[in-house]
Every structure is written in C-alpha cells, then in structure tokens.
Length: 281
Image (cartoon, rainbow, N blue to C red; front, side, top):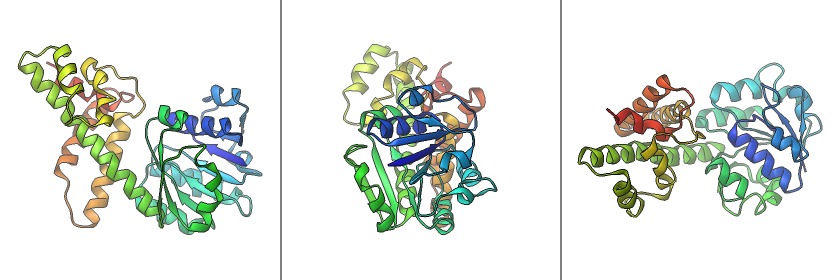
C-alpha cells in the first residue's frame, strides 16, 4: 500500500519505519528536512512539501506534536485537505483533543483517529497498541496492517472515542510518574540508597510496568527523552479540558501538569522522568 507519513518526530519515524519494514511503499515529510535518514535507508522517499508527500497516496498519516500543528498541516491552505487524492484515507496518529478529531472527521471524506499507546521502541518492535476510532468502512482500509504492525489494537466507533482513550491512559502515566518521583524523594529523605530504592520499587506491585520502564531514569535524573515534559504538560491540559466539559475537576492531574510545566521551563527537551530533578536539593 502507498502510505505517506507526515511528521518525523520519534513516533512518526518509528511508525514509518515499521510500515516500511512490512513492505508498504512509504513517503515521508517533515517541516525540517532530513530528520529521518534511517527511514529513507529503509526505502522511504522524502517529499519536498505536503502536496508532493500525499500525491498518489492511498493512506496519509500525520504524527505531530499538538492540535495546532495537526490543524495547520491538515486543514490550512497548502495542507493535506487540498492535496488529498480522491478515495484516499487520512489518519491522525497524534495525541490531540477529541474536539479536533471531530473537526477532522467532518473535513475529510475518509478519516480515522489512531493514537498510539507505547514508546517509539514499542512501535518499532510491533508491541504498541493502536486505538482506532472512526467509521467501519474507513477502518477496513487498514485491516491488512494488523497484526504485522501490531497484534494489539482497540476499535472505537467515533474518532473522539480513540482520542479520549489515549488521554485517559496518558493521564494515568503522567500522574503516576510524579507519584513515583515523590516516592523516590521520600525514600531518599529517609536515607535509602538508590540501590535500595531500585530493589524496593522495581519489585513492588504498586509500581505499574509503564512507570517501571522509567525507574532508572527517575533514579538517575537522566532519561533518554522520548516523551518530553512539554508534551506531557500539553496532554495533561487536554485531559483536564476534556473532563471540564463534563463538569469534572482533575486536581491530581493539575498538580502533575504544573510539575511538567516547571520542568519544561528548565529544559524544553527533558523527558517526563526528569521531573525527579525537581525534588533534588
């Protein structure tokens, strides 16, 4: 299948690489060129611009940082909507507000929201979970991607359902990461060594696998970034805004958001695990 992937951040590169490895004909595009030489080495073609990227595509996928970036690439003059081939499917794999997925669903004849659960490494290894939201006819277009892409995907009848599901999981991870950093801070205040904390928290059933994946980064304060604090704060904000529509407050998520914002002000590229450095004297 001819697939165009727009947005060569860590997740976009991983997705494009996985699709290329499954034999799809991949075209990539990024605002800053030459961001994905590894994907080009797998046979992908790098496009000059959006129009060049989507020309002849059967499926166009965006993996971008936030709502504004998706709206600009998808809907602005010179964007995907004006250049999409007839009959092509547009998929957004970004983490965005459910309201934006509804806007995109109205703007494109065939559209799916497909946010991804898991790190870029999980995408590359086929271990990620894909949250597929949208009409059944559109979803059938990519049925053949599974299980080659991953054997784990969940279906939602509306794009907004997939977006809300991604925010729900991200809320759990973001809140839990701050809790893990504070648990480490408490242990250190009680003179536990990092080795003792590694043994204690690494074996505790109270620490979920997603948090354990970053335990070493929390202990060292130097996690290789793949989910930045800036994006973590953005996702926490989206979760709070979605809950507010239903008249629900999220005080714990609000506190976590403030920590990610503080970290992002210090170091824009820091991973969420580096929140631990806010608790060091």
